[in-house]
Length: 427
Image (cartoon, rainbow, N blue to C red; front, side, top):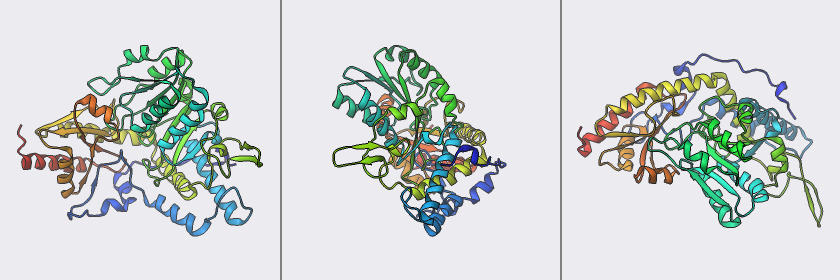
């Protein structure tokens, strides 16, 4: 297996927004209305640069074969590329060992892997799992299912009116019965950046393990699992498709001793050591959790996406998004009828802004904006508890990434002003 030491350091490039945008052909297209695309739905999925698209084509053109099974040239090449991608991801998040990187299909599967492989094995009736009110459904539903199946107690840290978590309540909610705290690093609905150090310290004080949903944080800011591990984090889950990679490839990082204590999620080929008609034994981590033929091509393309982001530098990515978000918060605040949900400053939120326009349903906002080429998200964003806490049925959501510009924020604001005029919204 390729080690981290075998990989060269990635040269950092200047953050040149015009050059970056040239790498994304889709940003040049016109939508059905004939308007130039302004893509502001990055919290749902990012676009892919030509470097990633080329890597997908290269694999299927030059190296297509199943991995870990063959001694012929193509299989050996595909296996090496797949394991190189694992090592790249490990280096990107600071993992000490590539074996700590488990390839899944998405963040949802990564969380479910922990629920099935660790929690189902170790939790007993009455044991507590603590989540929060700002979680994505993928970090709520698996624990509700486990609660109903195993009789565990599921508790949540409430959201305050400004979209942050009630940290005072967290200290009493996380108790000596808490075995796992599963918490997002950044809200997909509001952009709230969670102070993990406070919550993890409380979890560690009672001996609980910690799972972090990094779907919105890993693509947008520096993440170092060595630092998270020092805090007391045991698992980190995230998705490739939100960080320039294709759909269908996700990641679970876990501390190696914890991963080794877990049961497999699925049974089948490639995750076994021995099989007889009487019993089977399991392969070592990470193979134990990667049953069947994996998503080889997209894992390799994820490696190319990691290369791209590493070349930009995640500090630069975070700085750019903070500047765009700060500009957007100020620009949208001047649009008549707009109410922005969540913390009022860009320091405590990621590049996500949820808002409403007085008297206009979010879906109508989205449809009118689409005629101007502006693509945003409308709905509950797989975060219905957040909508219930805000007392709204849905919100409109603009979310930013490495290629977005202030001109695109202006297009959003101008489009919202036109929506307001069309629906008769006044100051």
